[in-house]
Image (cartoon, rainbow, N blue to C red; front, side, top):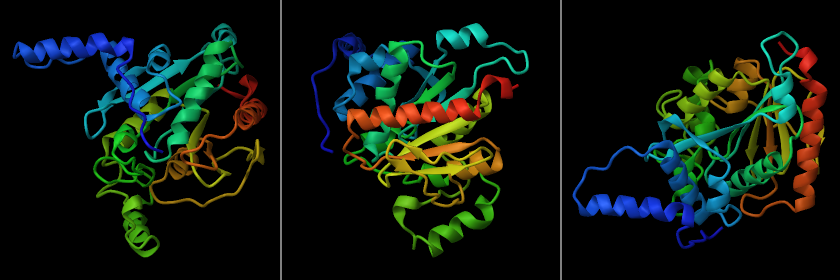
Length: 301
């Protein structure tokens, strides 16, 4: 997809003017507050993704994490706790809402994996939705998405989905990269497990949030993949289950096998062309149905 460059959105114009004034006065740049970091992040996404509006993005109340990407970009997340979940969530065993972590953009050149998360966030913002506590990370690899052209890896050339701290990383990651991928630079696992700030942040988010299930969005294989202890889904929309295997350093390996947190991977059919609105709706509906069948509040503690 060719990046779409737009004029600065109103939400971001004031920020740019303040930064310019500071530069004219020769002042050292001050750390940006959370709101300004969110504005800059949304502006960059709005320029790169045709389907994401900078103003609409800013209205979703994203918050920056404690870490930044290799190139210093914010790593953003947002929590959504619908009205029903707020009523029932508590510390009593069996009473809290399920926790679902949704992650897009681990691979920066899979643009649809980011765009569809924003579409689904609009759904969550429009109504109360089901009784689910969501933690949503639309873009785990901002440097990859915003590179020219967009690239799978982060700014250091590491495939984040081969960099998680799985027990087999030390013994298998490099051998797999050399032997099975023939040193494919798009799949380089890094010099050490969890060597990248983006991967460290994702692992910290998983530890902090303690999700009951992780939904990871990718493209372009057009299937579902699944790892972990739960009944596997057979189909979301037109996407049917086709297990792709477990790789050293992958999120499915880290979450589903090592941590025991079910990981459902949604592989959209195209990296740069969105599914139809009807298919987006079907995937969303089937995903919620599967979550409801497997992670009902009565089975959680």
